[in-house]
View 1 (cartoon, rainbow, N blue to C red):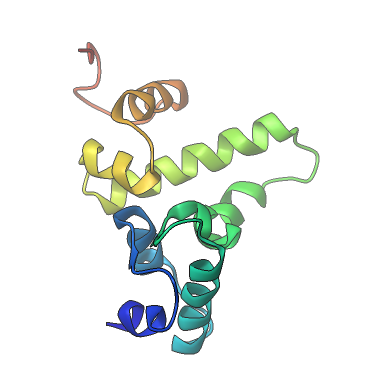
View 2 (spheres, rainbow, N blue to C red):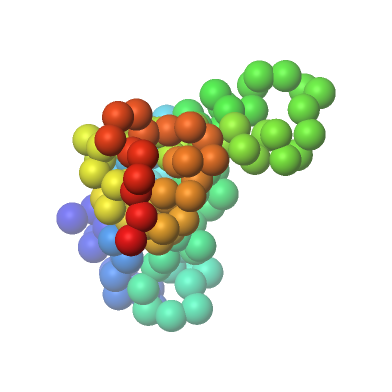
Length: 135
């Protein structure tokens, strides 16, 4: 209901499922006003009439908890190492939120299942029953 309220008077008519999932998962350290402002800003920035993940602020897309945990592990890491930690953390959190459902985790992350499987293997995520996965 808050999203619909925020979209009134803007060119945007809706929010994609992925963007809505990010909006719902975010902690909103401010208040409802911050949420409304974020949606209104995204409505102005969107190229179409549906707000998508790319229209949301970076802090929302990255997930503040994920970024904080992944990057607060040492200032002398390379960009590649920092990105790898961030990816691993975000994938694990998405899997946790999805109750282990990989399709849902991929949807939350805005990636395809094959890429999710590749990244899970790369980062040693998943646990039992993951060997022999393929299609």
